[in-house]
Image (cartoon, rainbow, N blue to C red; front, side, top):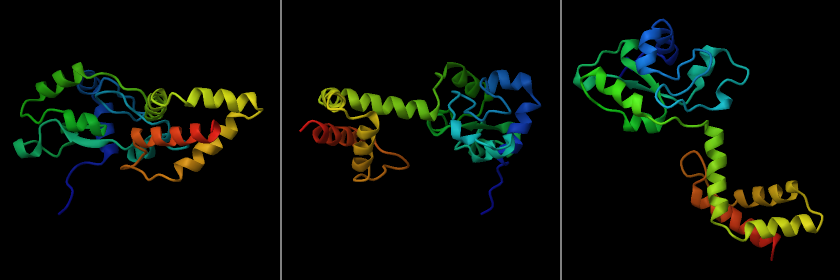
Length: 184
């Protein structure tokens, strides 16, 4: 079966030519910086040394219908938004574009993929009370942050990815194993 959806760059070009539509359907849109049209989520890695076109094509954003094909929505670039997976999953599948616009207007902004990843590690670290004393002990013995990172990396190699990344529970396990090794 042939994919009749337009390429991401074609969708980007459509919205670049429709600034009024962007205000309604893509409040975070910037042709030079790929991001989710609804929440602004992005990854700093998408643009590294790439043209805008290549960055948009590389972006792990999904092509989402404004009016779904199953409700008569066309495969025209103006009927598509580029959304992150959570936004695409939560977006309305409805036959009126106004519902998509209303939903987007209420969508919370998200930080970058990298900031979310750091925040996940920080939440995991909050649930490992032994970690801070272990790090203080390491530093008091003349160890460095690089030493702690080396121990963490070794323990990360004991895990597998859950989908495309480590789960928060796995991060906790890594940090607990690190703390036990640093502070026996």
